[in-house]
Length: 213
Image (cartoon, rainbow, N blue to C red; front, side, top):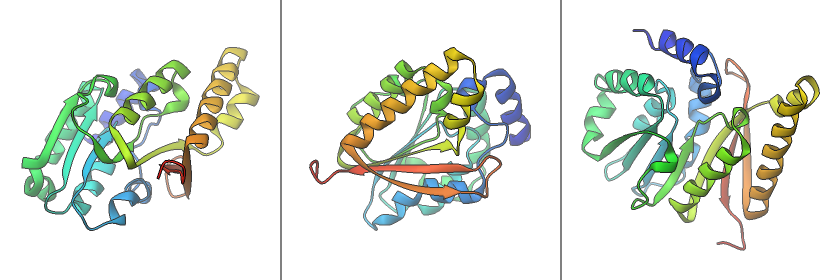
């Protein structure tokens, strides 16, 4: 089945965990993977929420010998489509001995692995703040003091939601915003805007603050 059809079907049935009707653009994928290209040394990489794999493909393009990649996907339909797609990918087949798949919530990912780069495509603004907090707690457990954590949000979505949504959704978005403010107290945040995407996004990368360095 065409990956765009799979993505749209899951968007209709699993909106909270999908967030968009169209996979990420190549420009979004490049921005999401920027941290991979900051060093030439081997890295341990975690990708969370790959969907049908547009960001995964870019990760694979940038992987070097010695890199390890763990792919965590909650949705079994996405995981099946992704594994089928990657089986035909030259870069995947070159690195497949160093690639691990984990199907399930990232909160249940074994914590034995510590990652240098975490790339997360979960639509946080669709989730309860308790779930957002639990996910970031897990990401922090899987991190060391120099780990880069990249995630995205749709430009203006929280602001529009506060104006146009019912009270319950406005309150939830406010709590999510407050949580992200607490992250900014712990990390430096680098942001890149990507306009060439079905829905334009801000790509945020959390990097260690001077106090944590």
